[in-house]
Length: 151
Image (cartoon, rainbow, N blue to C red):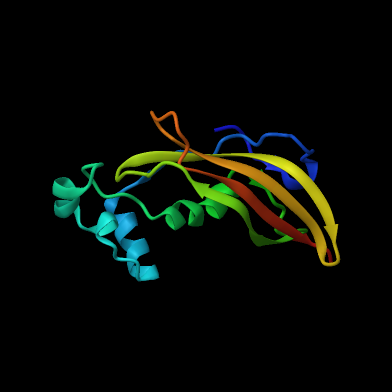
């Protein structure tokens, strides 16, 4: 993987290196279901999905795809923890376009869209797409917001 880019060196319209690939296995889906209480059969019942789902397998929760973003994002962007304090500030316009099937590999592509001064710091707005290995359609698109706090 390409080396992470320091947050404070990013310029608008600058793409980040892609995140590493991550495999979404059934154990991860089951753990997410346990934490969130979302045990809908399309996520956790492998036998039923094999028989009744048009996809023939379980799929990840859309929010699982979203929840993995911060950990992988910090592999794309370098944040100096001695100097910087950052917060996840939210998401805008998030859409789930293609189901992530069990054992799919996904990775994140992000680009700095803009920065904005806020009373507590600088807001970084990233456009992000989640690629599914060997699929044309992305799993998710959206804007992710990160606030670098000023001290």
